[in-house]
Length: 466
Image: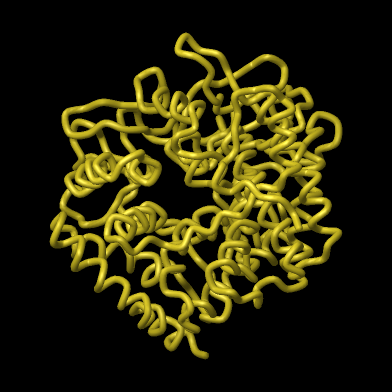
């Protein structure tokens, strides 16, 4: 298939997606006047970020011509609503296969090129990434994305075409990396330094090893979903996402879709990560215990939240806990207040921002996540109206905008934010995107309970292995 034919393929939505878009737009227009904005955001990732052969697409992240594992899944998740359309299934299957091969090539890379192009985020990175890697900031959530989307695609479609030998090998490699990074101080081969330039501050301390950590049972991450470096090495929402991802591997193995030995290792690791979160991931505040954002296993805890997902705000969305869980509710109250150093209130909006963007900049993604994890439709609709009112007339979402002036924003083209807005829109339209969360094995629940902490896993997902 020629490049011109490939480009034409992505110019319009697949038929099933166009049908979903039309139905949702009519409902959203009637209630919110949001029909056209939804259409634009829903179509954005499909028509602007997919590249190449539909059987195995490359997915750029918007205004950067590289493929982030995490962003890719966030950009494409709304298209689960187009299943079981063979055209949509073919694309999503191909994306999972491409991600699996990228993980096998370098599990520590967070973003890859469309082949060995030699393009890099920063020429000052050491060790220098190989030609196929855009950036090598190690992020636990990048690896979660492959495992979780592999499970979700099977659960939503019934197809196991993507669960091939490469996926199994990649899942095995992910678990081996997470095992190594449970003992980061002694066992990790990973280093990252950015030795010069305006982003030299991304360098990890101690020659690229990072700040000291003690063993906790959790797995270490060098960077956050924002691509900012971690202050402390154990990122709680990323570890929670890893447990959910491993629960999915267990389920796939129980269904006979992957080898049983893989499921055994996934279960053992999920038990350790979940127990580590329960023992070390909760901090005491004047209002009671809350989830910490990061800890180091040596007594240090970072009390904040970041707009990027996985976040503390997103824990129920990830499938870790219930929306009405007391510990989550208390953490949510903290996150959505000025006790969180990255929560901003302004004349036009208030919400969670990020140290990745300028001060007093609210992220539409965080407003979407507030709505998707809200306890009532009223709260979700209120957040949705703020999103509609702060697009600066572009009818698209941005990375962030100033709380006093939405016309001051970062990144006019940010496909992940557009897709998360579309996912929220579909929920409010009564056409929710499939969001299959794997059951929690009894062994994982037992590990959390044995820690004697206020952590509680999702009651809706509790289940026993067959």
